[in-house]
Image (cartoon, rainbow, N blue to C red; front, side, top):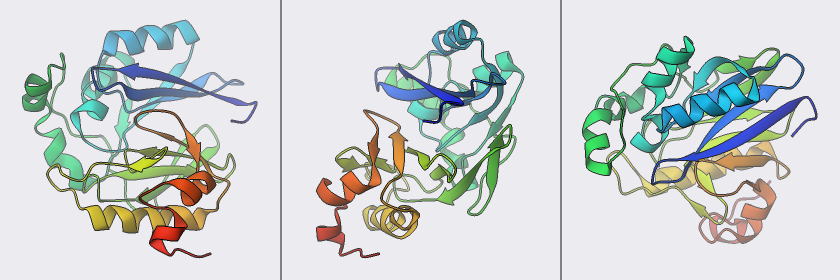
Length: 221
């Protein structure tokens, strides 16, 4: 991460989902990424960090990533950006899923802006490109910053694994295609932070990830 930007990962809910605060250390403006729940915990961390949250960015609509978004939007008085509109059906059943998984405070909502392939989002002047990467969910997006050689990938890709595809709208082959045709061409030295677990680098995953390594997918630059 650049010396001008910082990232705080705050695992929330029984799913230990990586809610994240990303901010400029110069302006202290920031974004809240995938607030899956435990809104009071997230809001307290934001206060402690002294960050001025400008927007909430969502990688996809599953309960463990979006369950706290409506509450945080209300408390922070900011807009929710993303995910792709194909995940609205997940956002429409957050309250139902919250009861199933024991996540308190979730509310159904519609984002202020959906994200599409080729869109960009900004934190101050730092730009992230949007890649629509379905497979884990129909509306999953990846946010990639060329300047930082860094990506927020949601549950598309993990260290040593990929997102599950057995939930409604999931598609295993589609997810493999998203990773190999949209993420790998960005370059091997891209660091990323997933929705669960530790971060990694595309090169490492292309060498040793048992599901999307080059030796398995036959991807070549």
